[in-house]
Length: 227
Image (cartoon, rainbow, N blue to C red; front, side, top):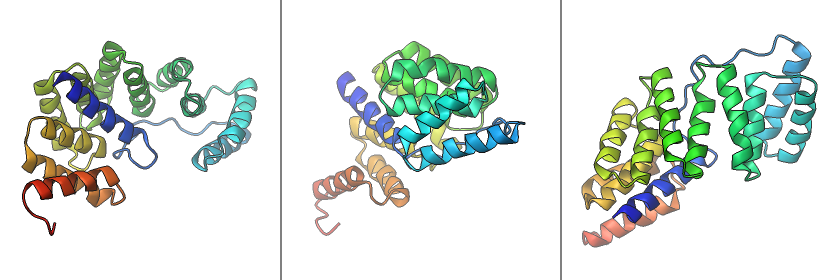
């Protein structure tokens, strides 16, 4: 059972990290634009390159910006994102930490920092950062969702379910929590709950093949062949 829960949590977190798969993130107290308009324009261009998937060009432009002395939190976060995109999770950690420290009430770098700790299997560090997210955004779903993911990784199914349900109470459409809770429902044999959650997931992500396949399996198990 422990292995099963860990696999389910990994799948949910992997989905969370894919472009377009995050739940709504409200970056409370996100940093304002740089006061230097030239720096602001260059930072905007790096962000555009990142969003367009032009990662090599984004790296060149961002490294030049950082070498010129830019220390804006968004530049630090972009540096971390580019390192993560290249698969260098360890190198991304200090940049994420710097971005969080430069804007103490900005949740986004902390969420990414916690997710990176999860990828590196540093459960305690991930849980601590998700607790910080909960302190910064106590009405949002990310804190309890993240701690649920940690609990699932540790094999604590009951705590994972409790925390994931709390996240969904705050935001029923938070996709990472929906995906994780569906997998937890599957692990406990709660087919009705799993099917309802998967239905919610495909409403928002209609191209989610894994969810459709699982819905088909549930329909087949219930002798609903037409479904």
